[in-house]
Image (cartoon, rainbow, N blue to C red; front, side, top):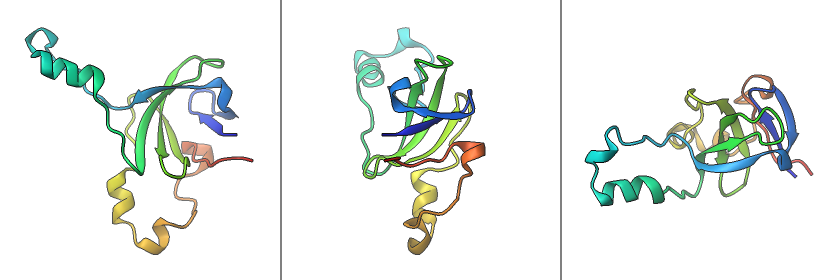
Length: 123
């Protein structure tokens, strides 16, 4: 079972309280009326599905009911950080790729659980 850190409630809660809502940081077209059908369809329906680091939007449905973002590794299911809407992630695929191989695969304390909500899978 996952324990997910809510950056608004500032505590870890069971995964059943949360619901994923899709890819984070999607820019809505500035003038939807001027978009072609293809551009609007791309915005509405097409999402990235990377193998590795991915940023997702979640909602704390049974808690504060606020939306927030999660940086998650899609292969290991490890949640690397949680952060409030409007904030930018500190962990990206680019920052992980630039880290030396020996430290990139180790489970270090690169993000404090108390400040950014880094967490893993709890048994």
